[in-house]
Length: 256
Image 1: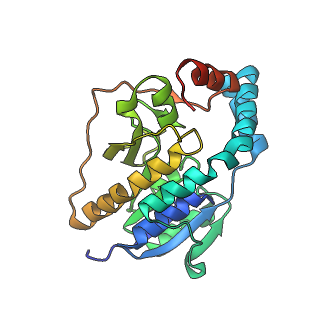
Image 2: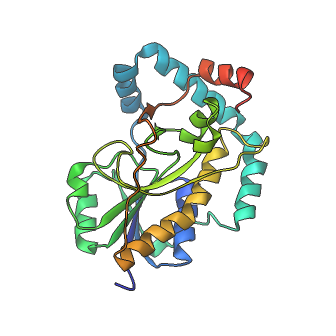
């Protein structure tokens, strides 16, 4: 298998486009399957049921705040992208297929038709067991945190708030039915500067993950895929910070 058949399951973010172009320098990608964003109303309702109204209200306030200050991070984002010499250009039109969800029947039908060797996942909702079992391909995801200690979301940010820079990084792992519980393939840390913030950490993480993803694909090609054990780390799921948590760590720990 010298030329693996690769499919990407992605969201609509520039980070997913960067991952595409990073891989495309080494391997041809057959299709890019882009899912629609989940309903915000449904997501909020599920969060309230799971976390409570007060916490979700704080998370929503932080999301609004984060969006408002995002333009102030744009120059740093551009600098990071330039440093790594990558692009977030649009996907080639002929490679793109849009679906309502990664878990939709249409997605399963596409994957079964293509019969890929590797499915690269980036930024999507949790993939159902039905999809994972539909084909023999290896599903490989980029997680913006060191697992299993920083599962969930914003792992790099949470590591910094815990004064845990040695575990501020990114994980490339196999996808299973759990939340960031799949076998670890590669991990690395990121170096954060005083110019970085909540809105720039994901770019540092994703760009460090690109060569790791390429290596993981190469491992599949060579039949040399191996997982790592991190029994030295506790397992914990982290959620979105609330506005008061963000302000607390901004003031007490200087974490932006």
